[in-house]
Image (cartoon, rainbow, N blue to C red; front, side, top):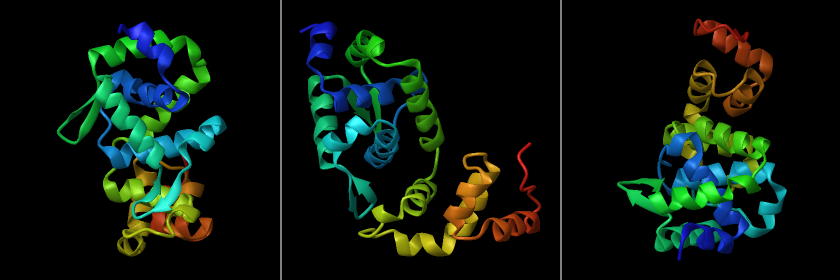
Length: 195
């Protein structure tokens, strides 16, 4: 089967998973944890994915069994491959994605690229802190939450300093009011104002 035929048989979840894998010049996705969290945030921006993915609170935050299955399917068809812990598109996957690009609007492509750039280079603690503290309904089953709570302020400062989060979201991750978080930043010699 050629790339065009395979692309015509992909469902919406598989199409967005390929778009995510190919975003930012095909930068590999760091593992299933990152894939789950990146697709969770994509789903927040593409409501028609919600019914298909059905994210639920799990031990590591939001988890979709449907996404796990879809990733496995993409791998078994040869569209993505696991290299160490990282997932990347294969040549066939790239060809399928090229065929599909006309189905995505510029805004969708940009949103997926921005979310991947935002999350893909975070540490595990940073990734989980962003998702757990910005989406607290998804951390109720978490096995990592207890470990993150004492670190949340330092993580929030780091994310703000790296320009990954603005001051409002960083203060939410820190569990502090905006004023208190601004004071904390100043104490650490970081300007709370965007440059």
